[in-house]
Amino acid sequence: GNSVTQMEGPVTLSEEAFLTINCTYTATGYPSLFWYVQYPGEGLQLLLKATKADDKGSNKGFEATYRKETTSFHLEKGSVQVSDSAVYFCALRGGGGSARQLTFGSGTQLTVLP
Amino acid sequence: KAGVTQTPRYLIKTRGQQVTLSCSPISGHRSVSWYQQTPGQGLQFLFEYFSETQRNKGNFPGRFSGRQFSNSRSEMNVSTLELGDSALYLCASRESGAITDTQYFGPGTRLTVL
Image (cartoon, each protein chain N blue to C red):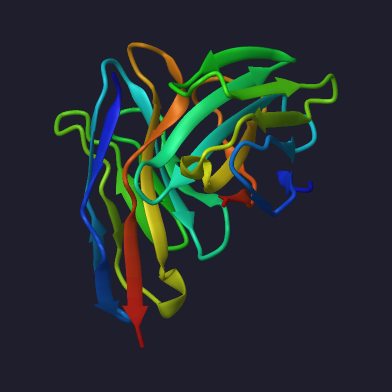
């Protein structure tokens, strides 16, 4: 079945540092890939998505590129802010089994210090 | 458009009781999915409803059930509550159910079982 492996957290960075959160997946076919963010006490918000190989999703300075050859969808941001502190989830849907539900990684807690 | 709403936001129950959670999707969205979030298991898919029919089900016991009404609102029910059912229950809606559709999440209902 489908699975998502995310970089272990927590991650602590200083403001304006570069961020990378690694995400790799296992799925047959061509799933859609997503990054969601969860702020304390809230539900999940879609951060960005990519639906086919080599697509780049971007939003609010965050980027991730769908790499079929390495089955990866790493999240990056050039300069993080304190307000980016949250839990980040990588997820996929679809693939060869056409799984309709989202399969999530375990989440990565990011803390940005001023 | 208003986002996904979930009621109640917080619930405290005791073992053996049952509970009903409610979800109102974004206007025009016909697909509603439910997820359970716990620190130990992460985010796990419960079920998906589309046009009042359960289309997909995760690996949860029969104590977990749901339904969808003609206005797309959905409820999930958990009977004979156990301590391990304490979790954040998230509802998500999407427009048609296509694999590439974005799922939008509500703020969740925090259930505590004592």
